[in-house]
Image 1 (cartoon, rainbow, N blue to C red):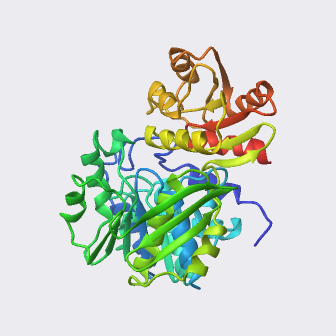
Image 2: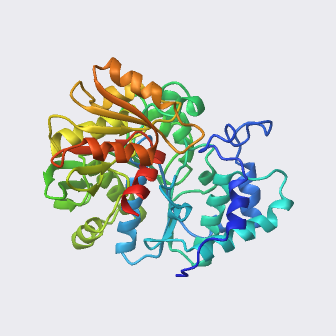
Length: 440
């Protein structure tokens, strides 16, 4: 890999495009550009030679757990000797994190070259692509260039109108359906499920991690998958217990039982993600079970930056990108089970779409905890004063507002005893900034 830094000029060009993540405009297609559409990404992909058709795709959506599931599925496919591309989003520190091949993020020089090729064809497009569309196309082009055997692609938002949905997936994965991004996906789980069902294509295998029987018809009522693999019926978790440095899980699929598999990850929810990833990998191989030694080796090597990641000791410092109430509740359960303590220091930075009282309650913030509210590095940041107010409404007396994430982390470390805990959460943007501050 090159040791040179990124081309600043080409990165400025990328940053100058419509970006839903930073809130520079609304939905791709908003701001006078029409409604949500796949036309721009399809046109861009065609100009690049339709690279997304050069390999089979495992397509992953879900309200929570999709990044972890995608990473674990990629690790399992690579353990079988395949050349595996991986698309995830958003990134924590560097945009390169979004695209990886066989576990390695794209090098600056390679990414710059991909971006430049898109810049050259952009004038031929009917309308300029968005930031996410550019990166999605760049990833698909890179994986065609390196002759990837398979690509695991995580949906950025929803499914039906997401730029990754130009693919016809071999395996479509739905981890779960919860309430999030209601301003884009709809106000209830039915509306959100309909958006996520958009990745299910005729002839694919559907790995359905959502167990609500009222939602299942939504995923089965459109294009018909060849096969449906259901959580708790065809795959799942028998046992999921705390182990030193992670979890020990007993997983099952329709073809095999896997006992006492070690996951170097925290939180019972990661066992559910591991089961979903295993089902996806087996589905890709036509239902043939993964050899147990390969699964054990693949999962032992998995890393999940910013997902209940321990980055410091004395005090214990943990980062978790929980960004909706369901994710916050999963974090609270994990903290209670694996890191019990009477009181914690929470560093919380939310985006403006979130209700701070609901998020803090889901995190289990109580009277004895400390809360340091901060502003995520995003134009969509919620005023930290609102977080502070919500904390005080829950009875927290030791609450404060510090504008930047870096300053908030410093404040938290200063007020937390060596045998205490600091938990940084609320947004992946908050976690990304904290991770840079704590690990650089």
